[in-house]
Length: 183
Image (cartoon, rainbow, N blue to C red; front, side, top):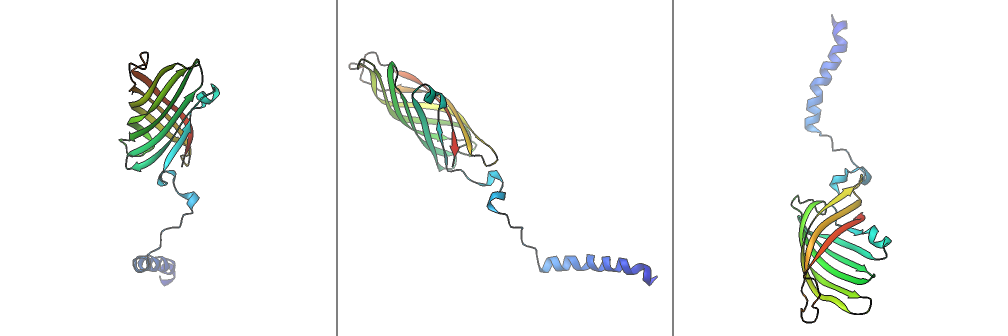
């Protein structure tokens, strides 16, 4: 009988001793190298995007968006289109992300900036400060969420002197389509 129980005694002794050893000497958590961290662990500081279609058409439209708090970002946007109506705008936009995963997901925002529209012959269509509202959505794609795609639609009001610029539009649509990188 002793011979038959001998293999089982070893297992039984190991089962009894294992909890005692683990309670006294807990195993440390496994060490992960930085490249092994899940993509969602790394917080994003912001994104920088440009509109590729604007570049193809001979202009420029881009922005840099930085985290300023939980669910909040601040962005500096620049647009320049040198065509029949030379269009230039510079805006600072404050965005709120209800999902608090900024700069990813749905956002709503308010902007303040400067807008200028001038014809080729030098006559001004309108110049002055502008305030606006924009809603948008950003995607961060890839394993490390480095590829950023930014979209949005909104309206801006041009605050221009109606005597000096009688043909100036009061409300100007605004849009955002950018491809870039998160950092």
